[in-house]
Image 1 (cartoon, rainbow, N blue to C red):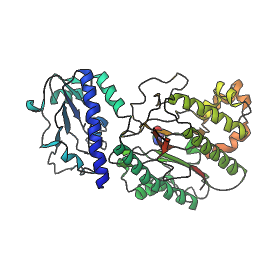
Image 2 (cartoon, rainbow, N blue to C red; image 1 turned 45 degrees about the horizontal axis):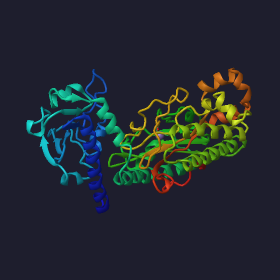
Image 3 (cartoon, protein in one colour; image 1 turned 120 degrees about the vertical axis):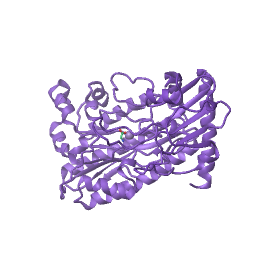
Image 4 (cartoon, protein in one colour; image 1 turned 180 degrees about the vertical axis):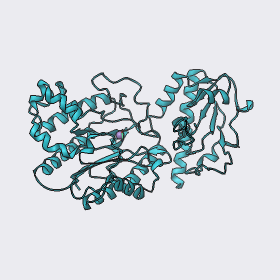
Length: 444
Ligand code: GLY
Ligand code: MN
C-alpha cells in the first residue's frame, strides 16, 4: 500500500468514526459490536462452506478476512479488534490486503469465539451480526441488528471517502485489464465461455471466489440471460457473433462492476447489431452526462427508457414514438432491469435502495437522490429475451415492433454497457471506468 493511500485510509477511519458516533448518538447506543461473520455452509447435509466474505459493516473499517472476528466501537475510545485466529491446521485465512489498521485500533488475537470481555462494553450495547445466536454469544442481552441504526450505517457508507474512491478506481483498473484481454481473445475467435472466464481470472489475477460477483460471460443468445454464469464449454468455432462480459475486480474489499459488449463478423445482421451496441453506448454516456446533484436516480432510470425507445425507433426495431414505446411497456420488454445501483464493499450496496421504487420499476436498486460522494453504476441494456418478447408479440402493442428485425438480432442475445461513476461536487461526475477503459463496445 502506498504512503498516500495509507494517509487516505487514516482519514477514512476518522470519517467512519465521526459518522458512526453520530449514528450511535442518534440511537442511544454506547457500544457497537460489528461481527465480521462466519463462513456459510453450502448444505446442512454436508461439511463444505461457501467462500467467506466479511460483512460490509465490518469491512468498512479494515480489509481483514478472518471469520469469527469482531470490532468493538465505543464513543470517544479507540476501536478494539478481536482478530479470530483459530490456529487451525486445516485452513488459514489469507493475510489482510494491508495492515494500516494496526496503528488505529487495539488488536487482540483470540482463538475461540466467546462472550466479549466486560471491560470492552459499556452502557447500551448493539451487535451487528448475520446471526442472532452469535450476537447473543458475543454480548448476551444486547440489541441485535436494530433496524434504524443499521439503516443509518448503510446510509453512511453511500457517501464514499477519498480512500474508498481510490480503492474503487484501482479495482476498475484491475478489471479493465481483464476486459481488454477478453476483447482481444473474443476477436481472435474460438474461445468458449469457460475459456474466456478463465482468461479473465488470469488477466486480473483473481481466484473465482475473490471476484466481486460471479463473472457473467455470455456469447451470442446467452446474453439474453441477464446473469448468465452457466458457461458453455464447447468451442464456439467462428460462429460467436457477440460477447457480453459483465465482470469486475476488487481492491481492499471494494468492488468494480463493468459490462462491455463486443461484436464480431460481417453481414447485415452483425452490422445492425453493431449499430445497436453503438446506440446503447451513446445513450449510456448521455445518461452519465445527465448526472446532477439533487436529481432523483429514478428520474435518470425513467429517462433511460425514453432513450432506449428513441434508439429502438431509430434502428427500426420499433415503429412507435419513444414516448409511446415507454407508455405501452415496449421498452420494458427490451430493457427489463434497473439502470444501476450503488457500489462499494457490496456490488449492490444497499444504502441507496432504502425506498421502494415505483411499481413499474420493479428491479431498480437505486432510489436515492443523487448526492456528492455517491458511487453508482450506469448500465442500460437492450436484450432479445423470448420470455418477454413472446407476450409483447401477442399483445396489441406488438404491432409496433418489426419482428423480422427482432428475429435477425435475436442470435446476438443483447447488449449492456456499464460504468462505475462517482458524483463529484465540482465536476458533476467522474467516470472511474472510462478513465481506464474508454470504449463501451462495438466491433471487437
Ligand atoms: N454486475 C451484476 C449486476 O449488477 O447485477
Ligand atoms: Mn451492475
